[in-house]
Amino acid sequence: MTHSWEILRLHARSQQIRPAERTCHHERATRVTVTVHGRLGTATAHHGPTPPDLDTLIQQAIRRAAHGPQQPAARGAAPQPAPPALAPGDLRGLSWLQASGTHTQHITTSVESSTGNHRHTALSYRWHELSSGRHLLARIPPGAPEHTGPPPAHDRAHWLIPPHALSQVLLQPILNALTGRTRLDHWPHTSLSDPAWHRGTDYEGTPRTPTTFADHGTLRTHVTDRATAWTHRTHSSGHSGLSGPVVRDLVLAPEHPPQPLPATATLVVAAALLACGPHGNNPVISLRPLGDDGTPQPPALITPRHLAAFLDHGQWCGPWQRGAGPWTSPWLMIGAPAP
Image (tube, rainbow, N blue to C red; front, top):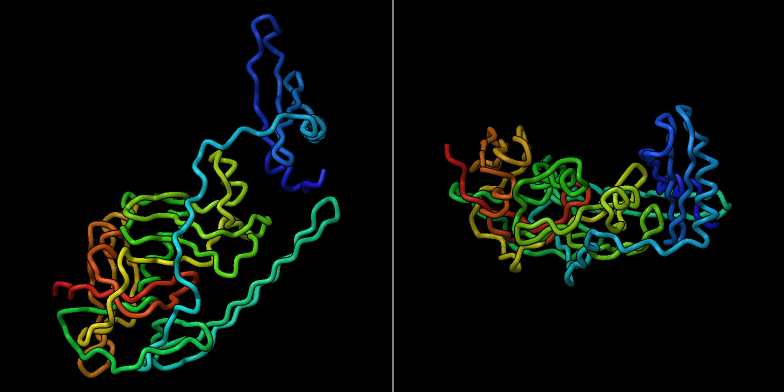
């Protein structure tokens, strides 16, 4: 068999079977089920209080899988394909932001199976950082064109939040919910998707394809690798990482194209999620604006009903840019927080 021993162990399940009425009540049975190339194999051992050798049972199940039936279709829905979406070349700079550095990341992984097969994966990321003063606001690919024009004049009625500040508030809660570590009671109407830039495969060799995770306030599919997909009886979404499911590119796309940046607004240069109730409710968000003179002001606090409302009640505008980690979105304009 060409499957690696590690994957076979991942798919092995041990199940205690209740003894039949006619058997001795001290007798027990352990069943192991494995899948190899989509075929099902099982092995059962009847025993006393001492459990059987699991490795032997797995080997028996593997041999039977060679002639076993095809695995039935998963009950869960397949990952939702993403609509034609953003490409890295669609990201734009802003002439009034300063180039403050370059972020470069190169990741190489090598996987060796029990059969001696090798699989290598190499990823390279390079982003130019854009700042206002000492505050990082966004990132863009090298060579991305710029939108020219002056920065928005100061206006206390509207606050303008760049992608990096948005990601400081929302990235971790969204990723935790998408991977199933936590749950959100409300999802934004903004589409959350992975466009699978540069395609290739994930760490387990599953092809990366564009996938929509959530849209119109509804979770469509979780981010899964083979292990979590097996647990939920669904399909891998192609997001395996070194230690669990991971998203390389998370694009937030509004229902309608973003508007141009406003002529007047207060620029937010930093943000943080200070507190949040269960399942994304009653968050406390800190926003640090620039004042009339361009200096950072004391942070203001906003308390929407839930995290999704923070996005749904704002207006998307400006160019698409990169935030922290995999976050990619336009800018978000909201009304000024109450004093």
